[in-house]
Image 1 (cartoon, one colour):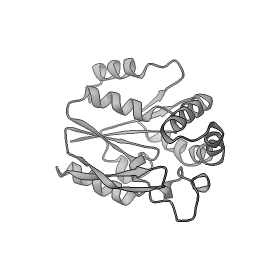
Image 2: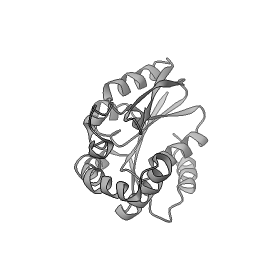
Image 3: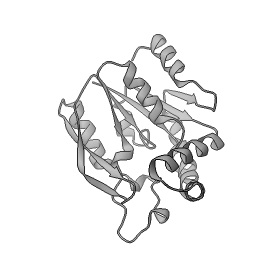
Image 4: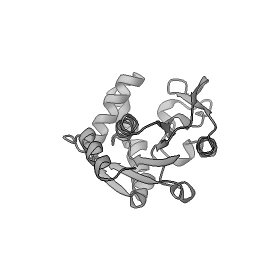
Length: 197
């Protein structure tokens, strides 16, 4: 099994890029770090909880699960519920395949994980493009207001990106500039023709 890392800031296009890879690589699956949030502490409202810093994630379980998949064992992937700020009781079965795409903010943070990757990408977008993408997504999927989304971005998302996510850019094999007019589908096709993974 080959491990491929897809990192970058919120709204940079990580999920879209990962899905494009899955459609083009045989027996590929995604292990999104976003499903591995730790439960929000009781009594802390969503708007006061920082989901964008490394301690918000359950890296221990994430590492255990991708190790299991590497060894040919299926896993039960958690499902994070944004409304409650906790994991759902339901899990999703993920079976091992030929490719495992590790996707998330902090995929390139830990050297022990980076050393296992066959290839890694870091997606980067202009801040105004990233915040618009993020807010459109969160308003649609989570039912939050645009004001809420902008407050979260300024309070938590942008500082975490500058302090924790952006420094991992140096570890990527390839940095992809994903601006407003970028065509990631065309990029993926060209890349895979020239650099078979």
